[in-house]
Length: 97
Image (cartoon, rainbow, N blue to C red; front, side):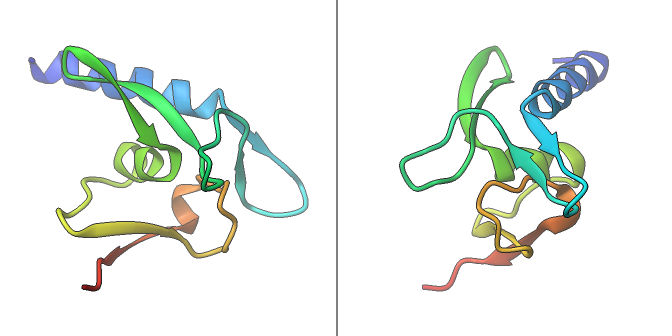
């Protein structure tokens, strides 16, 4: 995929994610309004290469707005809100064995 096509897909995925977000005046969280997993976290279907793939909303937000996630990286919400996808509230930590 060309760099321009990759940028277009990234922008489309960012817009798709933001369409599922609600912001309130009470806090800085971006409240996920889309599909929710059985564990209580957001989920979103995004274009990945030539296919669509299900992603956790917080991981998708981190990758789309901050950058790549390490192989053993876990994304946590520093605000402790499972449905928050605000990149400013997301932090990558290493998985502990």
